[in-house]
Length: 83
Image (cartoon, rainbow, N blue to C red):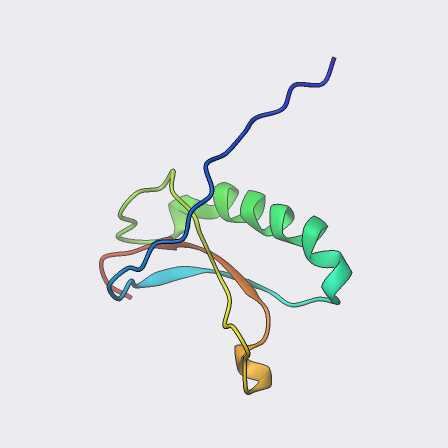
């Protein structure tokens, strides 16, 4: 038997956040497998990051209609008080 978990999905507007994490950059069809790997890696290394606000809360971020190669990709991160 396979157990599934439903997650609430919503879009909210936030003030500026200071985030630290991993950038995922790969061909479009590979994000579905690479993002969970980055999330797991971040969880495993969370103790290396200083001033984490909530270690059990990860943020996923990307730039819509990015204009440069530096903006391309997806970021898996946690919020920190200071960088």
